[in-house]
Image 1: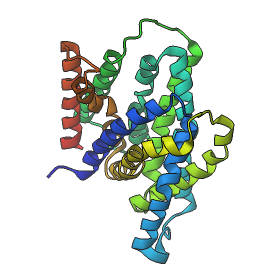
Image 2: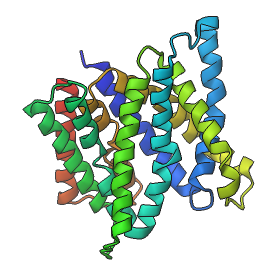
Image 3: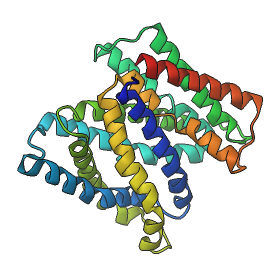
Length: 290
């Protein structure tokens, strides 16, 4: 029987691959802050209703200040800071370079888990992690045709900062959700997200398109990502070691390849085939050995 934690972590990358394509299209006219507020506003009531419907007055009874603090850090490391830093870095050094650097974040999460969390990290797990990361980085490079090689130190530093923050999100989500159901953990995360971002959205709103129009268009992606994907993400991190959960939840570039090829947006070639095979082998090692 395959372990559910690693499978859930990998499945969350599938929902993110689907949703991120829609978010990227919308971000041409709508700021990332507006999109994140829409995500929180859409799914927060669903989480709260389900929490109280299932647990009644005992909902959130196991939430501690320590756990809430970790979940607050996860929101700061993702929706509040990392998203904006990544887009700034992408404008300065290009999306391919920025995403390649930022995609190294599972390494920092794995390092934290081994050094401070006491998690095991043998040769098999190390090999699986490196195969996944190497394959994803290669796929990112192969999926973009940028010819410029910008040596913008600030842009490179921002991309690296994004990587560190994304690893912080992974770590803090794992530790913040201890003792909580996945519904409760996500409800707390989206409460923080809504409070922190709703006040800022008025200063960064740039959409000339009526909010209701793009919000309704994004609704399927939001539900797939912020509801189903978030449940899978929190469960996956909570039931696997950081090296496994962080790596498997970061594989959206792998998932997007067959879709892009089927739509004619990408072409199959030997280099991409090798990158996909390396990543799939890494996934198999991590899932079966995780």
